[in-house]
Image (tube, rainbow, N blue to C red; front, side, top):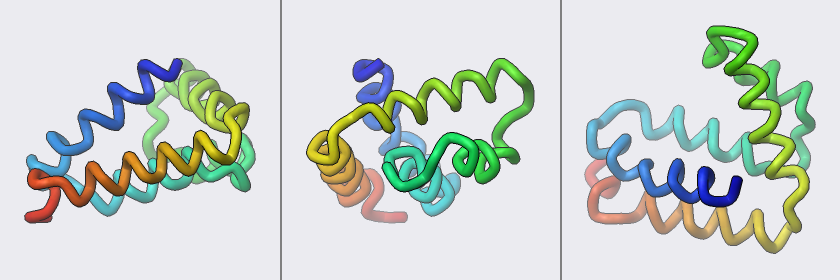
Length: 93
């Protein structure tokens, strides 16, 4: 699951480069890695991105993965996210 997370976060500059909703994506990532947001609250916040039951199950698994991580790991993910957003590709947006 860590590999999937790393791959998703490395794709962020491309998403930002396309100029499509970096703020929205930033909010989604922050809610996902926030250990104070439980699964139910997370799913309620993500309803607009859940076209079906399978996607909802995937979001639940992703959130549970982050909830099982230490605070130190979550802080490192936050640092990586900030490095990506301040990268050359996202700097213009």
